[in-house]
Image 1 (tube, rainbow, N blue to C red):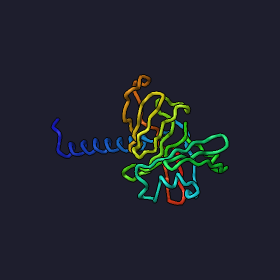
Image 2 (spheres, rainbow, N blue to C red):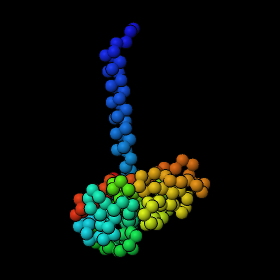
Image 3 (tube, rainbow, N blue to C red):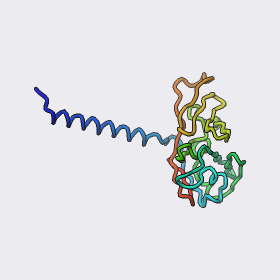
Image 4 (cartoon, rainbow, N blue to C red):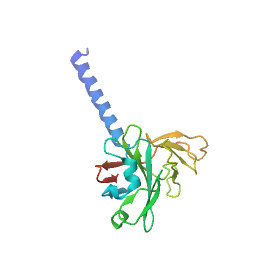
Length: 185
């Protein structure tokens, strides 16, 4: 059976559509649903370290990140300028992933939020060390894997003898209006 140019075109178009569909799904699935995240800060101006790293919507403060950790009676937000404890009852009802959150702006002025726990050790007590030095490089002191917050990817596995097939950071959705910010799966 001889193939026609129209049939070849339609077959190529179908393959292209399937490829594009898979690419979109891969991007959509880059967000983690492994640990529950559902938190809202309003007004964000009441949470100075968070407001400082996010900056103005659409611009951000590139290379700046903060951590948000939940304790039994308060939440701590830490950044390069220090840490502040908040005991707001509304925030205390939120879920902040496995080990807390890392929130910030990458060098392309895109907002990112990742789990503070190492995705490979996958336990709350193995939180990443965030140096707040503007590099966006964080490390798990337990497994020695380092990650680049600017992309959510593994930067180095040098020294890792625990995980044979390491995975990238747990990433969550962020919605920021300048007045409020929310995080969710």
